[in-house]
Structures are given as structure tokens and as C-alpha cells.
Length: 314
Image (cartoon, rainbow, N blue to C red; front, side, top):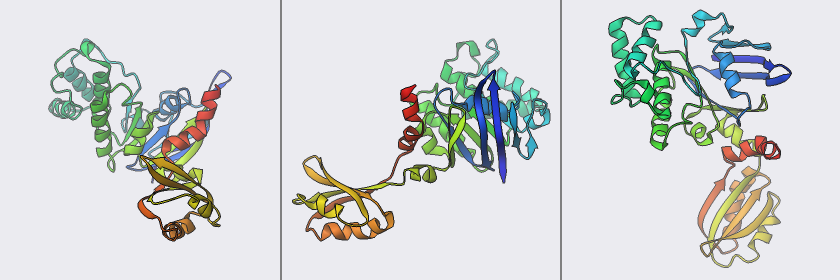
């Protein structure tokens, strides 16, 4: 079931379209990664999903209910972490979470218990009774995740949740998000490609307000179409690349060097035929294969294909 659905979602600021005709869907209990360069429309999309602003045109639904600025009941099902969360800095972390719990109607006993559990979850137990004013940006980011999870939301919207964290904090944040899979639908906006590859089930890539790719990680990576085999061999490889290039299912072949050993790089014109025929073709040359690997495109490769050239020109 689609928990989040957008049709023709558009938001303009004056004549500038921050979001232009977005269509997407996010399945229940999944972790969806929303990728794009700065200014692509990611934050605008999250604010529209949360009902914090209204679209110029188009429609968006969360849990089957159309979102608008008046969707107060729906907001109880949504947890939201903005990129730069703001707090009452004179409160302690523990006080703020208990305050948040009361806003969601949790009883005092349950609020205290839930706050303590979340402080442990985001590794803020030692700082729980310090004033938020003294928190680092990474600590406020983790406190923001805790407040977004306070009421056990069915939908969690996260805007660049790991951008201010050190490597260990980032790892812990991603592990916390990953544990929500299956019980909470997570929509995470980020420009950190490695984070998406680590935890997301499906990915959307947005650029200049328009969705330019949508699908599973494998579907996104396979957009390039071409696959390259890397085969490290032992023996005299002179002339082998030319032999391989003459095969009907090979588009191109070349020899590179790796620590003194020849490596054959073979671009397949027909992937399935290459999988079956390449090992035999190399063995027939008398070479010994030491390593055989199909090097598919990375998410970064596809991302740069879709938005990189435009960003460089800009």
C-alpha cells in the first residue's frame, strides 16, 4: 500500500518553481531516499508532505488522507525533523522531550518513560540534563530525531538527518532509522549518496524541482545500461583485448595494469551473452583468471550523469 503519494505536486515562489510536477509513491514500512543537490526542491517537498505549506498546484496524500495546512489530525501520524531543528534552549534535553510528549497527549508517566528510552536510543543519556543551549549541532540533530519519534509516528519525514554528525554519530543515526523499517514509513531527504545506499529500499532523484529518476537501487544503477567486466589475468595478454573486441556480444575491450598484472576491461553489448561467453573466451586464450568481476554503475555514477553536468555548468 502506498503511504505517501504525490500527483503533479508543484510549488512556486513568485515565478520560480521550487518543485515542478512531482509524481511519486512510497510504500508502507519502507525507507525511501530522496536525493538531489542543494536547491533541488527536497526541503520544499518535505514541507508539503508535512502540511507546513500548501502546493501551488497538484495533490499529495499521506496514509490515504489529502494533506493541507489544515490537516491537524494527520499531523499526529507524522514525525518531522527539519534540517536545522530549533528548540527552547533554556530547557534540558529531557525536559524538552517530556514537553513534546505532553503536546502529543502522553500521560506524565508514559512521557517520562518514553523520553528516557529515546535519550538512550540517540545516545544523549549523559547530556540529558544539560541545557540545550550547550548542545553541539550534532547533539541537537539527535535530539531532533528523538522528538520526531516521541509519539511513535507511522510516517517519519527527515530532512538531511545526518549532515551535522561525525562518522560515529552518522552510523548510529542510520542504524536507528534502519530499525524503523517495517513499522514506520521513512522519507529521508539527503545529498549523502552513501547513506542512501546503506539503508534505503527505493530512491527518487530530484533536480531543479523535477523528478529525474525513481526506483529501487538496482533499477537506478541499471539506468546506464552498459556493464563492464574486470578480469585480472596471469600471462601474456598482448592482443587479447583485440580478440575479445571482435566478439559480437562485446562493445569494447582494453588492457590496464594493476600492480604489474594485466587487467582486461570488457564492455558488454549483451550482458547475458557476456556472462556466459566471456570466461570461456578468456580461458581459450591460455590466460589464467585471478579475479573476475562485473563492475556495475554506482549510485554516484548515475547521480552525476543525471545532475552532475548541469551543476558543473551552473
